[in-house]
Amino acid sequence: MSESDQLNTGKEDPGFYDYWAYENRPKIEWPNGAKMAFWVAPNIEFYELNPPKNPYRTAWPQPNPALPGYSIRDYGNRVGHDRQMKLLDKYGIRGSISLSTALCDHHPEIIEACAERNWEFFSHGIYNTRYTYGMSEAQEREMIRDSIETIHKHTGQKCAGYLAPALSHSEQTLDIFAEEASDLFGDEAGFYTCDLFHDDQPTPINLRSGKTFVSIPYSLEMNDTIAYVVNKIEPRRYGEQLKNNFDRLYSEGEESGTIMCIPTHNYQVSCPHRMKAYEEALEYITGHSDVWVTTGREIAEFFIENYYSDAQKDIADKQQNIASLNGADK
Image (cartoon, rainbow, N blue to C red; front, top):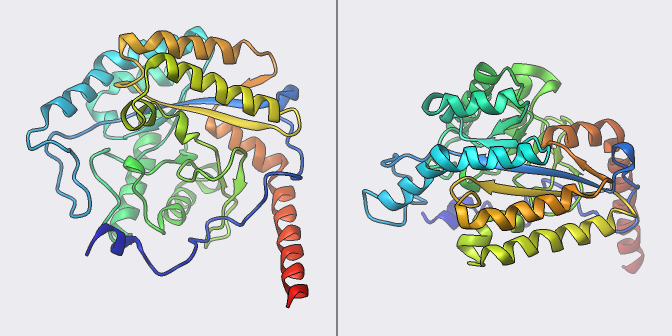
């Protein structure tokens, strides 16, 4: 069975969220009148040189042993992390770590340094070389629960968010994450995802449990791996792209609060020749006084407390209007 066959269940839409046009939504006002909520999500990951084989996706494009890919990722943890951490410190940014929780055992010193800075930790699975594809629901549930428990054990934090390892997820991923987090910590954990890329504002997500749950924009096109590996752009162009993205969202934030995230990887953005462009973008963004520099968890909590109910009502009202119009056309 191919990966596409395995993932195709015959649904026209996975049903995670409802259509909700960007214009004429209830206005979002971020704390202190900020036009934009800005967060940085360092993906701090651990890759295995010889991971268990997955029938739907290979961990490395090179033949075994994939030393170039493995060693540059090791560079990210031994060199790149410290470099980016110091830069975020300089501009008063607390990272929201998309964490391969195996790192807690392999590199506890990184976890300790981030915890000392009150950075957020959210789950990115256990290893970034072990994918959700092909897992049974029970296997995926075990993996997700383990990651939530590991974050709490090593940081004391009750994991709020989830990004599937290597963006590999099933139709049950969001439900499982919310259910396992709720079982462990109730409503204090498991209430947002970064795995959906459909909006520039938070949106309510439909779960089978009915739990309050939101998608927080993760700005995939601003991801340094997408920029450098997929789009193959130069550092200067990446810095310009970050500023251009900010300018558009900041302008739209005049009407209703927007979100910008910069997802990073310490083996990408923290290479010496790429740091200048990244720093210039951070300096530019944080130089605006009406930008809320925050974390993924804080964005989700603020939206849920202040706007979640309004968003649900607006979606329901507009869906009803669409249904009425469709009925009138028949």
